[in-house]
Length: 362
Ligand SMILES: Cc1ncc(C[n+]2csc(CCOP(=O)(O)OP(=O)(O)O)c2C)c(N)n1
Ligand SMILES: [Mg+2]
Image (cartoon, rainbow, N blue to C red; front, top):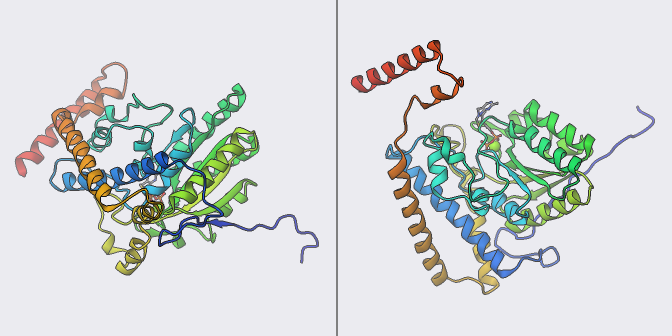
């Protein structure tokens, strides 16, 4: 038996709004009515945009896309807690957070139709593009934060990745660097319990992801990720600490991917419907709507009007998307080298010939 104990740890869990939308007034963060209403609007916009993009994809009008339904509270509430100068470094499951940062609704449709212009962030400040390569954005998030620290600036970086991504080497290297150099980072992990068809229990032995942060001696907390007030409060406190020079924080947000991983898989093949039903009861949007209703800020009539407004905005975005979505399939070949190279041009021709043949066969 060891004679000395060098470290013991515990992981705390925070919930402010329970599953029925009842608030714990001792923990309720101070958020203005306007901000609460904005949070609701953004989460609902993200939900409706996801649903519309899914339909467009099924109709062959959009490429494949990851769907964020059920996870809206995490990135929307974290983004609400951020200042404009803070950096938002996302993966691909943060549609709501991007909308909160001011992303035009046409942009995600462009991205998921292979149009690089969709990743241009004009109109938004300090937002990095969608990152599909798992955890590749986390060293970038730490690099940005390290630069902020060296320059003595006062902003911070909030990054996002999924549960599966916390088993990537890049993620661990980045967290180790952040802890060692006490960079102003807030690492939000969206633990939606699945990495495509791999459940959490098959990709790590830890009982929580938060304890992976504790291993690096970093402030780490688990929150109910379907509770926007808990996510907001944890992010705000972590940002305050980061800006005071008190180092990075890991926030593990427990949530659930209610639909497919992307439009390319069928979750019914690998998970049980009753698990999904349990999480549907914890829907962040329904829960937040009840909270707003209890505060007399919301009612069915306002909801109806908002749904109509959002539908109008999405209709306009789809119209804009369809007027510009003439994708040239061989465009990636343009960017391999600065100059045209014979071997690349041969490959381009081969690719175009294959596409034509596929079309003829179909
Ligand atoms: C480095 C790398 N390996 C594999 C993949 C393929 N891939 C895409 S998403 C995914 C699962 C990611 O799961 P998680 O991190 O939990 O995020 P979620 O999709 O659940 O939001 C995998 C394996 C990839 N994009 N990048
Ligand atoms: Mg996941």
